[in-house]
Image (cartoon, rainbow, N blue to C red; front, side, top):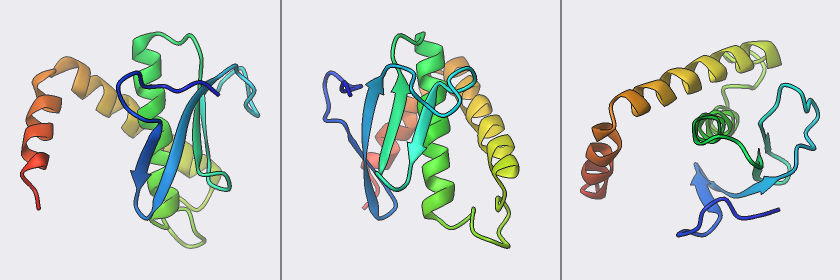
Length: 120
């Protein structure tokens, strides 16, 4: 699996877990519809190679959201996203909306980054 970032390592922290990010050929369970995959057993996020910048960005956000809802217990029985269908609808819509908001308002990432560096 190739590294996704040129200037950083390929690890991100979500909750108490450290995930490895990678780029690979499309070998996911559903190759037609999937651009990425979060695997909680391996603590990995894999993204299909050769995506456009927009598709890569949205897919990375989408898979990070899958990791968040999994590690924070929202997919467990009785929780709001306790079925694959519910989880996918919510994650997909939030990822698409967040990607659009960040694309349409480029100052947001810089502003959030500066403010979050001040948090102790």
